[in-house]
Length: 288
Image (cartoon, rainbow, N blue to C red; front, side, top):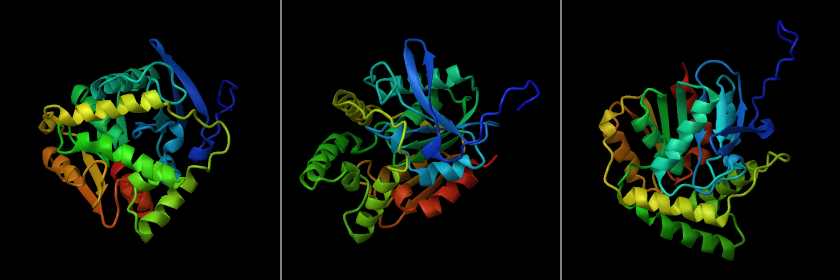
């Protein structure tokens, strides 16, 4: 108990056990989870295409939450959050700002993956003082070459997964070799660590709206990322079929002083395949 006799909220450092909470800002009620010690600058996680709160890998979140306040959330229209998925990445960044502002934070670190990295870039460009550090994984810059092809790649891999009764992420995130297939199975299995209070799956309509927003992002004029002065850690595999690996090198060139990690023999889900190496690197980068 604290000095007022109120029981302390027990410290949760396992993502599988982090309770789902709700926060209303404007017309939207955001579903979110938080874990780790509630002190200092929080690390807000921005998730990938079609993902909900249940799609974060505990092998990435749990090591960071050991010493940091971690927050994951569903964008409007996704999972248990109310509202509609907006038609642009910029609008998604505005929604993220609304959520973070409603939580009362004026400084955050960002951990992002794929679509989340696109939203994170727009957020940092529009609100540079809000963001302290950026982790950008499996993502690329606005106007990046071949980002717009993600729609065709995604639908093709969903078909392949359906025909083999697999999870589409096994095809989209991992190489289809012995190493990749084993990493994919382990990754999918870890998502079942949480057995209660699971999130609602994304609707087909919300997923399709996200896809169109990514396509538009890829076909837009480039953003001036030279204005980003935040410490940035960029990571990808050497064979990313969803957001081509070359775009991580492109981001690295555009964001001055950024750090780039490229993992061998891995695809879009490289940070999950190589979590034993990447998680400590992310923890170190995000350390105060």
